Image 1 (tube, rainbow, N blue to C red):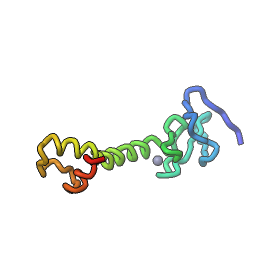
Image 2 (image 1 turned 90 degrees about the horizontal axis):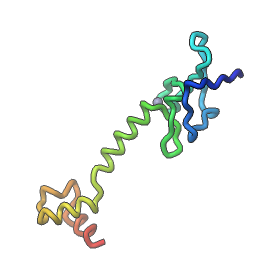
Image 3 (image 1 turned 45 degrees about the vertical axis):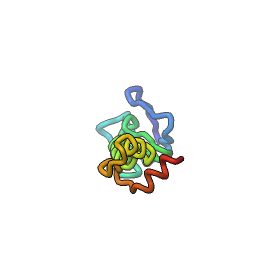
Length: 107
Ligand SMILES: [Zn+2]
């Protein structure tokens, strides 16, 4: 298989590109397209990245970043600090129970 590492393409040093399905098109000679293992889309090396050891395209990476924001919105310890500072106002429990927050404060 012919390989042509084009200088315009930036490679992520954490990504093992050889693991990915590769495809070259006649009308874009010199560019190798890698198949994203998550969405199956084809991207040049510039748009392939990785997160926690999982190779993925930029689009998938953006989606995981969004998911993380939702999950890690507020830790129980941060919530407990705010709950305490608000005088244990139940409007500031952030989805945690009073017991959970009091336990977090005690740790
Ligand atoms: Zn993808």
